[in-house]
Length: 221
Length: 230
Image (cartoon, rainbow over all chains, first blue to last red; front, side):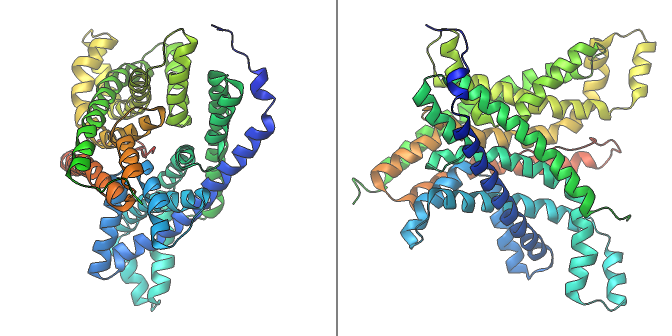
């Protein structure tokens, strides 16, 4: 048994690791984008839509938040082809990740919307703003501003969540790691390096989200 | 073409596999809760090096994917000279990972208790551990309970990734049944419902506790952390 850690055989494949990292960032970025869009639509529909739509969105949120991402991933990957949607592993992963984040984003934004005082909306109405402009400027933006910390924490979790999409043979950092383990037999070293890469990625993303928050919400309330 | 249809036998197979999901979640909850308590105590302890150590522990476990932690535990055990065992690796990982999250939840609740309580205890001659045990934690429990129950939901869901190191719990049983029946809608729909049946009552209970404890107190956890993992 060899007990000494040897990082050499792992670091030779740095190019593979970087390509995996790129795929991970791509998965995370796209699913965060789509998930947030779903969240915005979901939260508005939940708060202002007709009762049936509101109930439907509530079901979606509860169903997604109370089942594992892995099962959602399998469901999308194995079921959609039966309905005629032929998806690659990575596309299926983006779909599942977006649907997953969408539920959390809906719930977070809804909490922000509910915290908007009724008087603000009444004031906007009496000023004659259209329904669209009320929802956009008076409700959504202040709500997003209030819940931005929770939202960005959820984004960080989403980045780490992408690690499991290797289960449906999608390409990303963890899948690259698993391949490297089979090539080099340096399992522990590989996962230490990968953990480090994820750690740096997560810290960088935290800084990025904080910066974006500062830029987007820089005016005074 | 499928080898067989999804029938009562397959359903039974899934339900039996649920035992291991529940057991794993209970192990993670117990281990994580215990470690979390210790980590939280260290995080508010007077000794600064210890606080840093606990902070580093939390940073690592909250800043890297749990799947990587699981793989490290699984493959790292052979490095230490043990045979890799999925159950041991999963139990260790979920306990350590849960310990970090519980540690943050508990610390938030402990720090929400006013400073005056610590000072009063010191004035009464209580040392750190007794203050924590007899004065602070009894008051902090109502604050930590809702997020703790909420995190139990996360633990139940996260146990699904143990399937990726070959532990036959619900998620792995699902892929096995799917392979022989090839009725993914049926199989993963059923499995989703089983997970939902485990998680939803906990979610509802967490929401109930939150509403109940929110009324009648002005104390609040500073920054309630978002927990979803996988």
